[in-house]
Image (cartoon, rainbow, N blue to C red; front, side, top):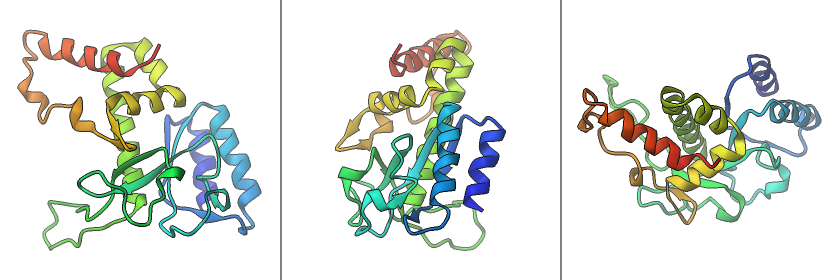
Length: 199
């Protein structure tokens, strides 16, 4: 199913693939999986994958994080420290992944979840947001940001401390605070995207 999902995403020419799962090197699918990831890389698709929450698994034996064309994401605490099972040497970035409530609007109480898979979903969501606002303000900036290496640089320019992406450094708590009627909001948004995209 995982292999089919990656192949399907490639055929749909998506901008981002989020892989919140891992397989080990003894899996029969590794070689086919390698080919599918290469096909995605050749298409210039941005790929995020989860760090193995089995912390003792070596990076080279765990896929897709073993592939150079993917950005491995690890889970962090609310304070930005890596969760105990995350080896920061083997991740590109850290995002929140401890005690995360999936659905705040659920009628029944929801048990918070933890894991690098959640952090990976947040990374993909952040990348999607950046692409969306880039598309709003400038077609050229959007085209640049679609490149995996430029998205990685954009994450770094958001503000990174010990690999933890500090989104709040660049994004206001509410975009509604900006004056959109006068054009000030759009100007600020353009400046934000421009500051993140390395030309």
